[in-house]
Image (tube, rainbow, N blue to C red; front, side):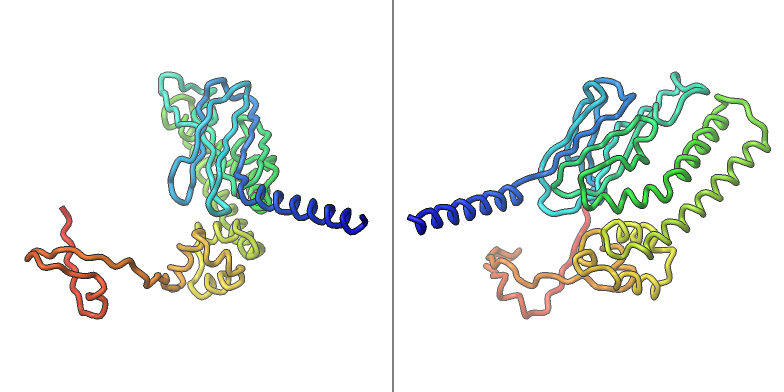
Amino acid sequence: MKKLILFVLVSIVIISCTETQNHRKNKGFKIEAKVSGLKDSTLMYLKDINHATTIDSAYVIDEKFSFSGKFDSEPKFLNISTNFNLDFDKINKDTRTTDLAISKAILIGNEHIIIDATKENFDMTINAKGSKYNDSYNKKIKSIGKLNNERSALFWKYQLMSGGFIEYSDSLKSFITNRMDAIKEEVQDKRMQFIKENTDNYTGMIELSYLIQNFQQEKAKELFDQFPKEIQESDFAEKVRTYIGIKPTYDNSFSDFTAQDQFGNTIQFYDLEKKNIHLLIFQL
């Protein structure tokens, strides 16, 4: 009887473990967001930044919206945004950039993400929880968020002045220009420092890819070599690999087939493998 009970218990544990593994394998991602200040029926988009494709869209209801799906590989660098709405007839001195559009980048896998933000701080909020990948991205945002917000505010004020929506003096316009340039340099320095301190995560590689031209090739390779192999071989590192001279590898396997040439002769692709073939491509 004891052996029977033990067998049943072991069977239950095995079945439970199998179901848990299957759940993890089959689960996808879910993003739930509450953004105070967003109007109902605003259309939000979820886009893959690396591949410039739209993954999902959703309407805002009671300041909330959600996306769901499943990634075939992870992590994914995504952008959540509205359409850019530039209506010159509605722009005035009180118009803010968030009245035109809001946008936020996140780095996630097949995980459940909760975002709680306001319309004004949506782009730089670090209150996006639930992703082991996005933790490092939040760390980057925290280091430059205030500076980016200041620069965005100054840039929009400059645009309003240039468009004649608010009065200004030449000295004020010059001050704003100089301050934006100073912020840009400070942000870049912080991002470069972030890369050096984060060669163990995907955010560090994404930043290295964006700022790769600011590093000498030798220094870029030194940083690249510090990343785990998994990150080095990811799509996020493609630009860096090219910059430091790592040539892509290709799969030499192919599917054999037969076809007719311009003279009506039947040609087998396999027979061409070891011949010196010249391929002429004409753009129509």
